[in-house]
Length: 640
Picture (cartoon, one colour):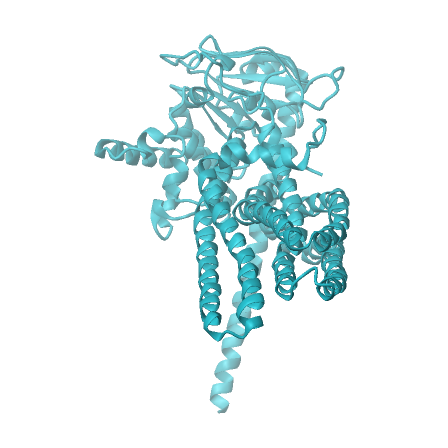
């Protein structure tokens, strides 16, 4: 399960839902107005039986037809007034409800953007998506409909019971007493339904995650022929959700059974008692008629308690899930009085850095266990180590994607924790091995880190943005964008999957270069490039790195040779630093790592050549098939 459970005591339903109030506060006057309109409609509905009582005990009993039309017109007017009140209720609450939902969704998205990478490592994207869409939609519908009717119907029931008792104390008390089991069952219903509702909403999040992973990994599933396996796994999860939804339906059906049965029993008992009272002259026919007309009016408010309660408990669960995210404590925050690097030079220092994940045992050595390393301004440092040595983690600390457990990372003598995250990430840019692009144009993806150029209407800024874009694309050898349908304005598609891996990596590299940072951190950003393209990119990068501090995670010997110095990361520590030649001469572990990189590079080249031969052979076979098909077609034409 990807969600986290709080150790705090479970709040009551009222207190849990009341946490929405800060978001709903601006719209509450409109919601109160909607309640007033709904209450007006309920009161008007209760007045109609009083008019009918006068009609039955008056004109109908005396046979005076002249009084029937006025009473009928009064009932018609009350009906029209009720309709107006209902229309006003809807008009008052619908738009404010959407504003509340928008505020909560914007707040959730802002929180997700602010939370550290460690949070997103723990949470499934489908769970977050279901909170942002399904749960907030449910909260909106409850605020606009469930809350209003729940309060108004409860008030209507109280007023209605008072009216019933005013006509007949005994019949009113009988009707009230027979309704008591409803409140008892409603209390028991909450305890049972809340658990099922929470389970269903969590399972919906799991199902959304499964769909998202299948869509994003569709190429892998098709390539390995695992579509059927994925479908069966999805069907199992869907069946689990279906069973939970059936349990919900059974719980709701149970309360509906009592909500329908008990009023019917109350009606029968009151009818027997009412006839006896009317026969004894203790109740007029009009009062008896009005009593049952009022009881009929109260039937919907009483029956509605069932689905309004289930909707309320669903909303309580949705609120809990929403605040599970909003209550997450972000340990990576900006300082109250952030420092500033006025003239960034790009001196990067790791000072006795230790890092371990939050859930790792305290007595276990960290992934990084006392890393110390200094990069001088304009220097290019290659970071080398075996798989799992902590190279990627070390680069992630530079921009506070994670925070150090102990020690410091400094830029130009300032602890990066003393800088605002926005300023820090202006000075340090990253390109990752797993190049992620957004469903936007090439221009928007490359200039993502330059809001100073893209968010200005100044013609000079537009010209500078074009220059920076072109220069970054040239450095990354990404001129292929000019052959795309709309050039740099082409939308690359979700996660850039419409492009090849090498094309995505080049655009991600261009994005890092375009940011014009003082420190450029590259986590093996050339792994998907062929040897020739890699050589061109490295040659262009050397010009950039001549004036920029560079920290490069190297998985190829050719990448190592770009660096001025090389740092060897071994068992969470920097064990040696020097030039490539110096380390080859004096460090046995470095020679082992470099030989491993050379073997991997040679294997990659051989694999590429093998794939090329297979493709060429497949092309030749296809040409032969095409020629044979053409001969057959020609022979058939001659025969005809």
